[in-house]
Length: 184
Ligand SMILES: Nc1ncnc2c1ncn2[C@@H]1O[C@H](COP(=O)(O)OP(=O)(O)O)[C@@H](O)[C@H]1O
Ligand SMILES: O=C(O)C1=C[C@@H](OP(=O)(O)O)[C@@H](O)[C@H](O)C1
Ligand SMILES: [Mg+2]
Image 1 (cartoon, protein in one colour):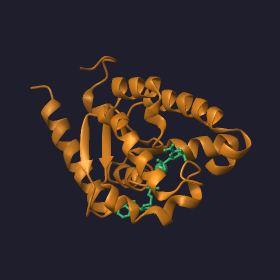
Image 2 (spheres, rainbow, N blue to C red; image 1 turned 120 degrees about the vertical axis):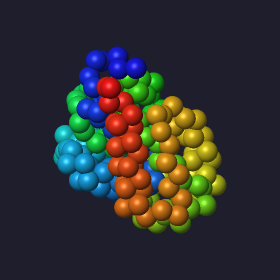
Image 3 (cartoon, helix red, strand yellow; image 1 turned 120 degrees about the horizontal axis):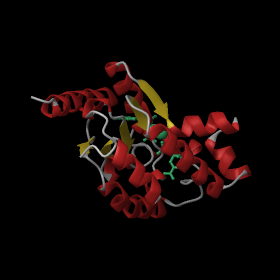
Image 4 (cartoon, rainbow, N blue to C red; image 1 turned 180 degrees about the horizontal axis):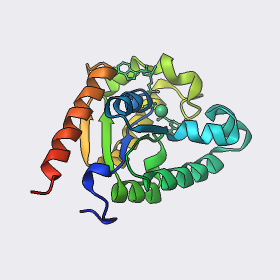
């Protein structure tokens, strides 16, 4: 239902899922394909502090990062026609889940642990939450985070797909959904 009375077609799209599933990469591609603005919440926070996420965690702390994450998401999720990638920990906060699900189309990018493991070297340096944890601890975190992503409007299984293929799939699904919601 459209609680905010905006048309379904204008709703912003929010990508959720665990760190490294491809939210930032794929979100940017989807935005380009749909001629929409792309907002990466981590990049917005980094711009505000003029620091990389790891540095923010180190110098200001995770708590402040999470507060900023909440206020930035609250602002952007209420705007129309955006493609928004949120950090993998954002949905831990109930207020963030609520505001995104109320105003946006929430798409969950899913990836199996086996495939995710292959990607760890690409992301470890820029993800403070993963640093200092053993692979077993990261697997535990991966599994423990799963329930927070269960609230979504649509799920995409990204195993064995290139980022571009996932983006194409999302664009096609959105176009179908928009056509179905067109008033007759
Ligand atoms: N579908 C994919 N297949 C292979 N590698 C991918 C895919 N999606 C993203 N990547 C790579 O994984 C890394 C993390 O992607 P990123 O978009 O930053 O994820 P997130 O924003 O979810 O943390 C990047 O190096 C990116 O190039
Ligand atoms: O899952 C998390 O707790 C985090 C995920 C990161 O974003 P990505 O999911 O884009 O990597 C970033 O917000 C921060 O490092 C914390
Ligand atoms: Mg990201």
